[in-house]
Length: 224
Ligand code: DX5
Ligand code: ZN
Image (cartoon, rainbow, N blue to C red; front, side):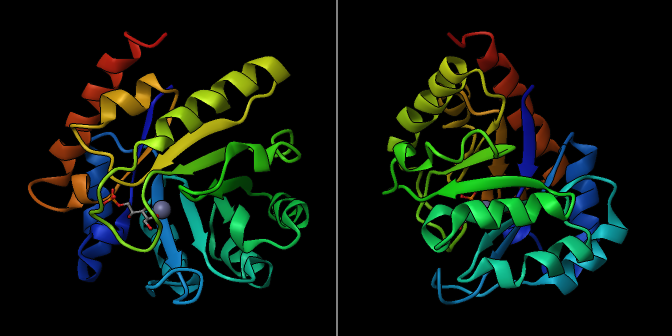
């Protein structure tokens, strides 16, 4: 099943609840929350306090993408604030298995994220414990960047490995997903599509989500 996860990074932060409810009206299934610390990535965004208020503003699952150093220190705060899904970067975790187990022990779905330069093979020992794998199709830190095409082969590889190993993690893609790229990412195997600029950058977030969802659903028909 294809789901659109609007990234609030490109939303109007002074009207977050309204922006999320517009995206929900258009068929958004998950709210993607980009957490940046100014160390792991060169930008600073939001923390658990925003998650706490978002939790009261929407029924949708909150997908917290932690682009931070030392995520173990903050995972419990995000879970406590109401995060439903929490993902950590392979590149930021010294003890990746421990971080993923921590997320699961707090009752959240656990995801692992890889940057454009990180191979899928680095995840071989954790694929059986994650609920989802997030493939970055831009270098993390900012919205509105150009899609990096090597993500496509990585998603294909993740679908293949899932089949071969009989696993059931979901495949999420993040960065540069718009009406131009949505078909390709879906055909490559992406199931959860993060979109920031394409949803909140201009126009009506509800119809933007609707348009992406429709294009994604058409592309599933052509999926191998
Ligand atoms: C980038 C973030 C993304 C970003 C995607 O560091 O992880 O979630 O908001 O934005 P777009 O869809 O604009 O590329
Ligand atoms: Zn993200």
